[in-house]
Amino acid sequence: MNLCCEDVGLELQALLEEKEVTVISHVEDVPIVWDKKTLQFILTQILVNAVKYSNKEILNFIWLKTSFDYL
Image 1: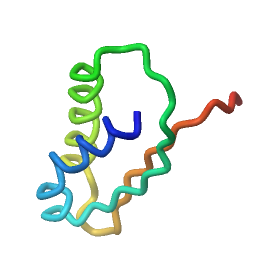
Image 2 (image 1 turned 45 degrees about the vertical axis):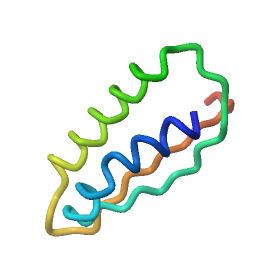
Image 3 (image 1 turned 45 degrees about the horizontal axis):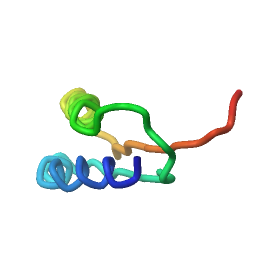
């Protein structure tokens, strides 16, 4: 999961810098039972939409976290 998130972050780095959005990542290398390309596509779409609809008048953060904790 960690490498997948890093790849997406690198892919979107220019967009995140342009829109002044900070990504805070606490992603552990948890096992994923899914196609890596599909997961990267989904993460990319989520982040692009988050940036697209971000408020330009305040500081914007995207927090990524993985965990085995259950609420």
